[in-house]
Length: 62
Image (tube, rainbow, N blue to C red; front, side, top):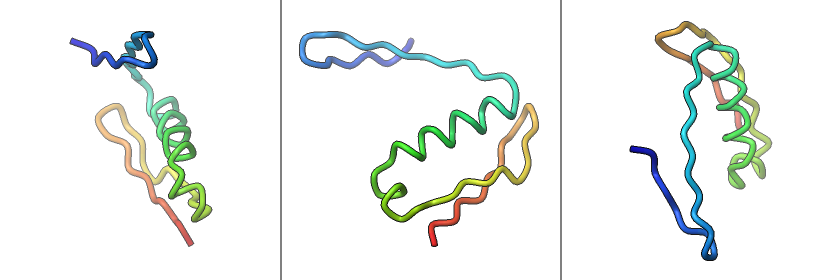
């Protein structure tokens, strides 16, 4: 069952099924970009390997 959260009286529900490695990498980059600590550190995300079974990335935070 998807997670639900309340946001000021509005209920939010989200689920994502990402099948291909490039889309998963893009989603991960976006999630990391939104992390304030990583953003302040100027972190860079590089996809090292992507298959349908796994996604391996390198995060360089200077």
